[in-house]
Length: 357
Ligand code: GDD
Ligand code: MG
Image (cartoon, rainbow, N blue to C red; front, side):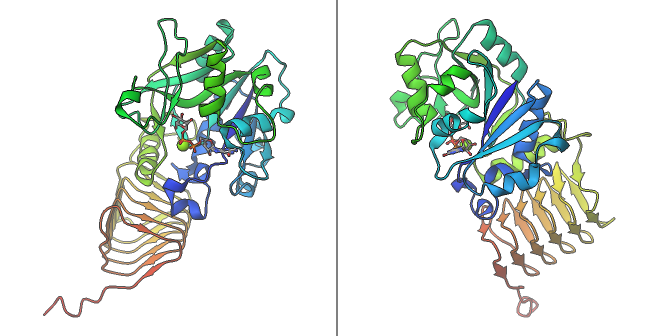
């Protein structure tokens, strides 16, 4: 079976991390979130996946190559300018080998999902649907696409990002994993911007096409903001979100080249990337430390996302802070929770000269 993964979004809400790396390539549990989803698709029977790229397209091929290391064939289709989610799906049609009636799996590239993709495809085929959508229930549906279904599981309506309380007709939302009949992909208008959520799905419903929900409340997380991103990484490391890239879930996942001082405490589902060093008596809890970063002695990091080649001095305290690539934070700093440090910023060491007086 073939799959298409949409990875062309700008990831604006994840700035400043996405200024240097596209969102789907940011590491959760030491692998890009796309890698976890690609491997799940492979485990569900997908043998060939097309990455639909736009923003920072070159980064994907440099990492995944032809997919050999991940046990799947990976092909790339890049848009000259972003075509939107539906336009992006249509744009890969020439690269698909599937026959008109074959099911094609379509995945948003910025989510983590533990649902049973194989079962979703089986249901789609059994019911001879045009499109089926993985649906889940969430407490706050406002940032998502609302998808009410009838007693047979047929989709009644598709309401992307409801604006008013009256529009919140259900808490059942689009989880961003679809199965399309290949011929339906070909029917999307070519060469212009199309939103699958605002145009294609409502259009199919207007024509009474068979669009069905695959309802499974499995582990699911939208990696929409930096704190969700740290949460996703913790969930993978600690085993709440299944991924065959995480061999032994536990307190910490450290790359082989990471150097963690014997007196440091690293725990709470932290992910420690290649060439990272953590100094003496430092405490790192529930955080992501990307490749080449350094945490100085006696510093404390809780629920933080630290980009590549970041330098954190000694006696620094950070809680729920995001530090982008190449930044450095001098000794004795304490940043307010929720702070976001831009790439290559230097925050000077805080002088302790006056505090002793
Ligand atoms: N190739 C390409 N071109 N990909 C795109 C483009 C584009 O122009 N625009 C967005 N994408 C990719 C993004 O990288 C992401 O993987 C996916 O398409 C969805 O786009 P987002 O921009 O992340 O949409 P969203 O998070 O606001 O909402 C979508 O996902 C929700 C679930 O997380 C919608 O599908 C909602 O209905 C859904 O509930
Ligand atoms: Mg998204």
